[in-house]
Image (cartoon, rainbow, N blue to C red; front, side, top):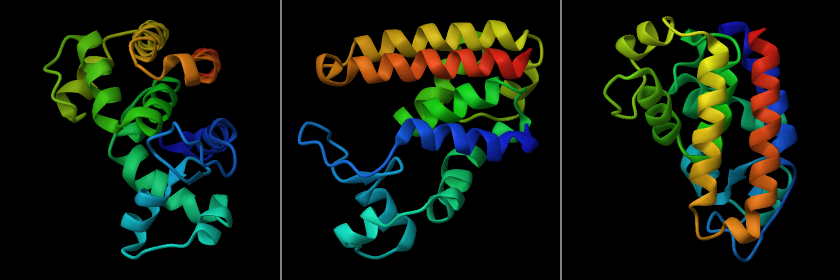
Length: 170
């Protein structure tokens, strides 16, 4: 839902945390969930480590809105479902989150949420979608080779997001 973006961004930034540069994270240098490569692409230029360290919510908010929230059509999704799709989109890509939603509602899973997906989503109770996506997301994480390293954090994030989404949908 359109009015949920700010609240969802606030929750997302709590999940993403501050500056990290974990040697086993293929994303490399990251702050507020934005990798150096994504931020460079967003700005169209090379950025320094200090620029990544200095990122603020005001810097990354427009990027999250355009590249994740808008691409996943979250304005058009029911409250709670928008948060599930947005958080998973940021964590694993818009296409992966969109395909999971599409598989659950039984439409072609092409990874791009459009009018058919949005109309079909409306035929389900938001809680049904949220619970199914939480399970699909957990299954996805547990299948990754890096689950042993990052799995506890991913699982916590998934459980928190699912609980928050269910509360939003109530």
